[in-house]
Length: 308
Image (cartoon, rainbow, N blue to C red; front, side, top):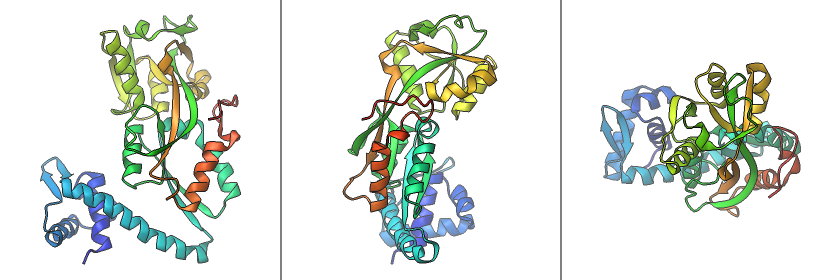
C-alpha cells in the first residue's frame, strides 16, 4: 500500500532536485530517502525518476505522481488542520504563491486586514516567479497564485488584481539623471542589473531589446529588488523595477527613477486558482478580499490604483 511518508519524501526529492537535498530538508538519511523512492517504483511497477550526476528529474509517470501526491498530502494535512482547530483555534489554512512585486507592494496591508477580520485562518505565503506560480497552482501546490499577466496560465481561473508601473532606476549622477522619462531603446547602450533567470522583468528586457534588433547587456543578475537597488547605487548598471518598490530606496541610496515611455511598462497583476468553486471556504474568502478590498490598492504609495 502507498505510504504517505514515502509520498512526502518523493515530493521533496522532485522539489529539491536531488535525494541529498531532500534528505537534508526532511531530516532523514539520504539512503533512507533513496530506499523509499525505490520501494515506490517497485510498488507501482514503473520508473519515477531519471537519475544523473546532476541530480534527479521526474519521468512522465513521476510527474503525474507528483501532482497526485501533492493533492493527497494536502487532503491528509487538511484532516490534521481540521482536527487541530479544536485545540489551537486555527480553523482554516490557505496556501498562497505570489511574485515579489505583489508581496512588496500590495500584500502586507491586504493580508493584515484579512487576518484582523478572520483571526481563525492561517495563511502560508511563499514567493515565486510568475511562470512558476501558475504551474504550481495548476499542480495543486498552492490554493491561490498572484502573478504578472503574460505568462502561461495553464487553464487557471483568472481574476484581475492590481496594476503597477515599471520605471528605470539610475544613480543620481548618471548621464540620464537630468531626464524625466526615457524610451527603452535609449538605454541599450548601458549595462543592466537583472533579476534571476525566468523573471517577467527579464523577459520584458529581452523582448523589448529584440524588437530593436539589439541585446540587453546584463552585467549582473540578483535575486531580489533590494539587491537591484544596491547594485544600481554602486554603478553596476541600470535597474528596471516597479515604481512602488523603488520609491523607499531613492533617498537612502541616492537613486533616481525615470518614467519608461513604453506601453508594456504598465502591468496587470492577476489572481489565479484552479477553480473558485472548488476552493476551501477560507481560500474563497481570501481571494474575494484580495480582489475587492480597496485598502489593498496602493499599499506601496498611498495613491491607490484602478479597481478591477
